[in-house]
Image 1 (cartoon, helix red, strand yellow):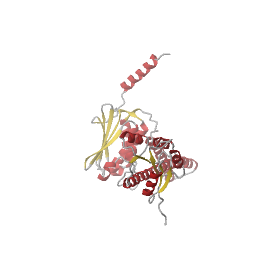
Image 2 (tube, rainbow, N blue to C red):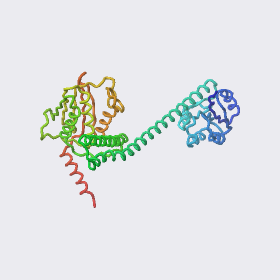
Image 3 (tube, rainbow, N blue to C red):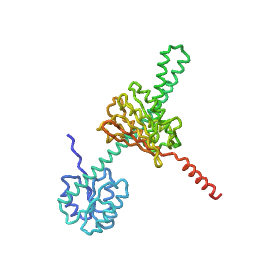
Image 4 (cartoon, one colour):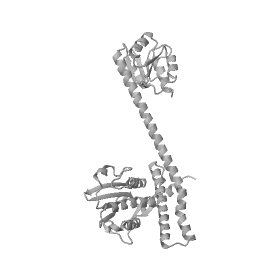
Length: 390
């Protein structure tokens, strides 16, 4: 049967009487080491294994307790050992000075056994909790690093075989006499390969956005054709549901000449809106109409996606959190999380509002592209260049 190892205490005091008293109070619960002066105390503190706690006298010849404490805290091997000062002084300034040097507590003379036991037990318990927290944090960091390494390696290694999946069908179609049905199967394989590659690239971008290493290439982009194209494709994907969509700009249905410029990255915006619009159509009932309203505001563009389909109440508070999903057997819980990350990376955001028990509205905001403001900023920049001394 294993036994719990007793903590080790180091008593540093030039008084053999005080060492004897403390030893008598604490020896039943702890292993005791003792040093008659500061130099010997430093030697014992640096031995392996180090003590779990040090009881340190303040007033000692040659090297006083303050100097010993200062040296302990300056040494990486002993800096984390809790130090309790033992002193006859009860002046506030002395106590403040000792605490400033790194001591965790003061025990004043004359020594009271109950106080000594309580203070020692308390600070050993605190130190044990600190160790456990440090171990857990280290384990979490190692797990996160391992997960990220595995994810990056997997993503990298998946791309090589995908090249065969994507290019193989075209080679077979070119070299072999195939029936239309066979060509259709090969086309499906090729399309599936492209979808997987897109997922891998999106995952890599997501990792960069999470870690703040994504390099945004913000440019003017017209949201009208972007949203029109995504919506048409999404309606085709759910054609069996007989749904419709209406896109409006400033409250008016869009036309061929409608335009609304935002500032962002087209690929990120495409991924974000495709995700949101497909999710909205998937959640909406048959024959439903999806409303997409584009509105220019002060310095931003708001795109409101309203669909007849309520978000389950259980996931509303965590709707944009990672790995949150409901009602989807194949759901990853990354859709709205990645969409919001895409918006925030483009200096925008996404919010969700349940209008009533049958309608949900997502609002995406992106910076408005202001051509006049951009031109003025460019002119100011050029002016600073021409004004700079040669």
